[in-house]
Length: 355
Image 1 (cartoon, helix red, strand yellow):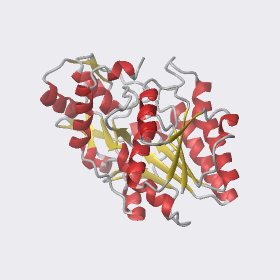
Image 2 (cartoon, rainbow, N blue to C red):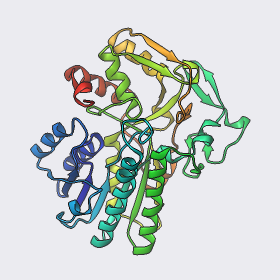
Image 3 (cartoon, rainbow, N blue to C red):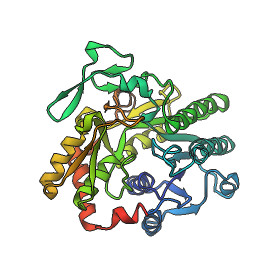
Image 4 (cartoon, rainbow, N blue to C red):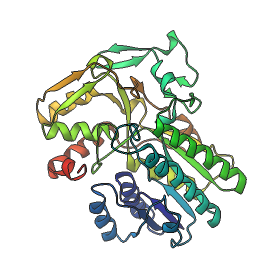
């Protein structure tokens, strides 16, 4: 079995690569990365030391893909992962679409030519922002709790947001680029008879993540607290009660392995893959954990809510459990402790990974 893993030198890609090398040593893993993200070079050195075969290439350039060896499966872990991408002044809207959509098209064409399977790591941000923002919540202790019984919303159940929740725009340019990629992948699967799986991930976290506030919020918060950098509760009256779920990236690997090893034709293509309610937390709860670990720190408040922010977003992964027997394995405490340990051992990681 030969696999192509894109974004191999990013946090998620490198975590997947190392876990696959350990759990499935007979698989031949080919990594591709454009090394544009600060910190990628460090991961490249680690992966090379573990015997991973790496190619330097950009998914936006078809010619960069022409020299790759034929693979049985493509796992697409390359993307611009920020919900603010294209509108924050740090990257252009064209760059975002080229990275997240044109790159997907080039990979789907590669899968078609190879007659191979395609797995895409998608995102919870393909769900409609107005619908997510309309979920009624109430403050209970240190977090918001949904009150869906007061105003039932299609696709919102007791365990969170399901795969049938609305994906109507607006989604953000980032969310729209990922949703468009999902749709195209499904069409390629039907048109050319390719096995296709689209895994919508909650907030991924773990040691070595290049945490930024709009991407790896758990890693960003823990590392910033440890370094005594300024922190702010943004939006929702500045209370810090907004809630997201947290999933360690390595917990994805058993699911990916099952999808690759037995890609049943009747298996659902779209899956939520998240930490769920048991691994969800508010920023206030995370702050309390950080204070216990590192001591007190000041957190200021910015009451105004940003345009893409939502008060509560937890994905229901019941379909993944029912179809593949998959559940996350790493506890919230273990994930946070791993991030904190890495922060203490690598005091300049935030600066290195965000230069």
